[in-house]
Image (cartoon, rainbow, N blue to C red; front, side, top):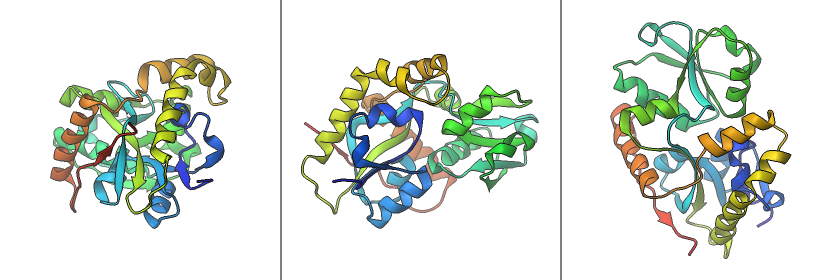
Length: 253
């Protein structure tokens, strides 16, 4: 199983890979999804959108990167009122975040043009920009002139439900004994060692790591989170084309 598992190099995934980091290759979300789809990995911590668009995977039950309110690391920064925004520059690293943005804007009757960008150092030059993950947190830590629409909070206000950003997707065509148990146990250990992870992680300052991992990010994939996924599927079908598949959850028990 060595290096046949993929994950993302973000602070919010650290508790889910605790103790098995040496078995994992870390790469940006969109690259990870492509390589998982191509069969380079047997499992990957990928955006929920990858699972919804490609009927290739089972989803590990009980484990997610989710939020139930403000997420802090996925947001639209905009200088003009939302109704006046006609172009949004999007970090293309996460398709889930782009699709969530489309859903949130569609709820408000807005359909601005979305264009890709990848030059984080010039992010504050854009009048409207979607940022995710560590680059998003870094943007918020600097002075800026933007208003912030936190997509986790916006989703909660619209639906009353948690939002699931990422899940462990396991390829159905590759049976690796003990894999799902190992990934589930990593999450259990990561939650038990959360204080150590917060203390020892290098990204950002201690206070931010502490509040972000304890208050903003949720690691459960339970009944409410699954209701949130179903609601996302329903709304996503209204704003994007192509087939969308319901997740098939598999338990480690």
